[in-house]
Length: 256
Image 1 (spheres, rainbow, N blue to C red):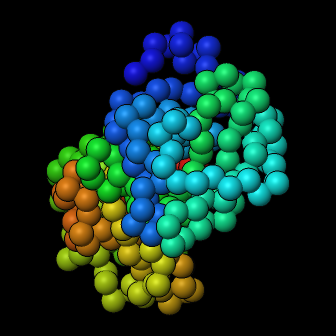
Image 2: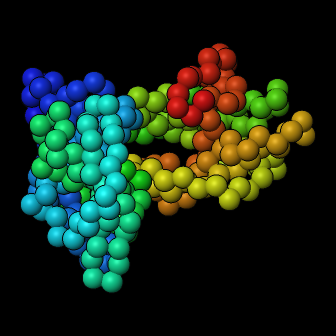
Image 3: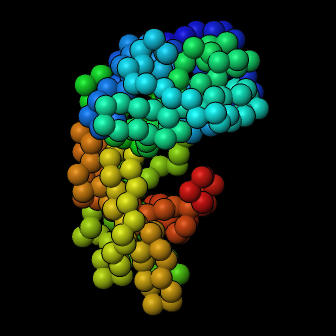
C-alpha cells in the first residue's frame, strides 16, 4: 500500500488513487480482458473503489468509439468498445490519457457490470472491488433487540449476531424463530455485496400497509460471513429498533 503522503499526491478533489497488491483479472465470454499484478484502486466515490488496470496488462482489443466523457477530477476520458474473440462489450472501457492525475494516464477502467467475471487472486469477487479499508466483524451477542414497524413488534431476540462494517451502523441479524414471519411477504429483490454475498428480501405487512424490502437474509453467504447465514436483518434506517430497552436513533446512511 502507498504511504499517506503518496496517496495525497495522487489525489485530486474527492478522488483518491492507490496501488493495490492483489492480482486482478477480468473476463468477457470466457476470454481474458486484463490480468495484472499491479492494479490501481481509484475512489471515484466515497463508498468503494474501482479498479484501473495498466494498459500493458490488457489482453482485449480496445476499439475507439469516438466518444468521450468528462470528469471534473479525472479529466477527459476516451471511450472504447472491448473486443475479444466472439464477443464485444460496447463502451465498456475508458482511458484518461491526459488526466490531471498523472497516475491514471496509462491505465484503463473497465465497466464492472460489462465484464462476465472478476477475480482477486484466484477467487471471484462480485459487485465491486473490496475496499482494503473496510472491515466486517460479526459477533454473537446476548443484547436484547426488538424491532417495531407501525408500532407493531415484528422481531424480538436476545441472541442476535451483530455485524460491524466500517462506515455503516451495526446490523442486527436475528434468528428467524425470533421474527414474526407471518408478517413477511416474499420479494423478488436481490442485492449483492462483495463481503457477504447475495441477499434475498422480504417486505413487511403489519396490516397498516406494506413496507417494501425491509428485511434481508443471506442464505448462502461468502465464507468470511458465514455467521449470518440464515439470519434476518432489518433496515435500522426504516424501522424502530429498541436495544436493551432503549429506542435507537435511526441512522443516516446511503440506504435511508
